[in-house]
Amino acid sequence: MNIQESVIGIDLGGTKILIGEVTKDGEVLRSKSYPSNTENQAKAVEVLLNALDDYSENIGFIATKQVGIGVGLVGRVDYKAGIWLEIEPGKTNPTPLAEILEAKTGLPVRLGNDVVCATTAEKQFGWGRETNDFIYLNVGTGLAAGFVVDGRITQGGHFNAGEIGHAVVDIHSDVLCGCGRRGCVERLASGLGIKEEAIRHLNEHPTSILAENKTELTGKMVLHAAEQKDELAGKIIDNATLQLANLIMNMVRTTDPECVILGGGVTRNEHFFQKILANLQSNTIRFVTKGVVRSQLEKDKVGLIGAAVIGMRLGNEGGQE
Image (cartoon, rainbow, N blue to C red; front, top):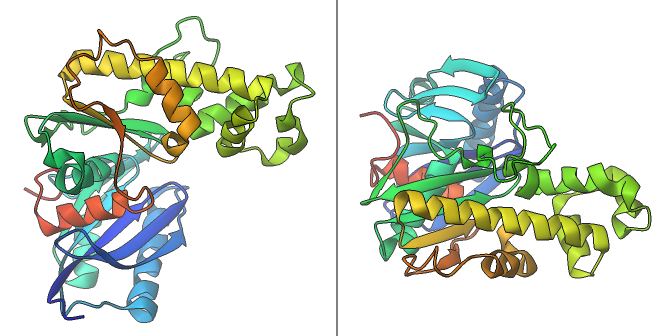
């Protein structure tokens, strides 16, 4: 294998750090996952630097030359200045991460929000090759979106665009969100929200198969229980997919996309995906001509590939300008 140049991609999430070597064509040559620590930004950076050392020493690089580093980060990122602003509200410590990594590696570094990076990967190597107007909706542990309008990803005046998980979809809900409102879609339809909804209602359904594993319950277990016709799981998934469909229909009225792309582990479940589609009203989504579809990119690598793309300077959505 004779590869001249590659980019180091880093996807730093709430539970793991994925580091990999990626070609300009989006091929992941090698990668390794490490546990992350997002207790605070200082700890997260310390863990990241140690992981980079391990990767360099024990995995190594295939290409002759690494031309840059792209980093996708959970939380809010000032991509123009190369500063990681915060992990989440209440955990704010503006950190010049691009400068730190450049000093360590001698390579140019660009930063981006993790969902922005996933959207960038979709734009460069996925459905974005067919349209310049799409929404990438990531439904994983949490819930967020990337909006591409006329070929550009919208990031907002405070680098906070796309936090669509805090859209209220159930005004009668008593589920309190960390943002201070009730009925936010993230608390009802993300992987974590689905799990929490099951725990909230387990006492009302003592015969549910979910009660057998209360201490180890996950969103994935609720999805599987719904496929097995469990009553409690069925109610939770019915509501989650209804509210996601409502969210999608609200979003398409806002940016008029040709395509809505669903990413993240939750939407990979076929039962879940089909229920979302069944709740969409044809008149509302009639201009979504390329459909509500699932990402064709590998869900565990999409953030890594997107981070590498901004590191390649192929996109204008991350890094210093």
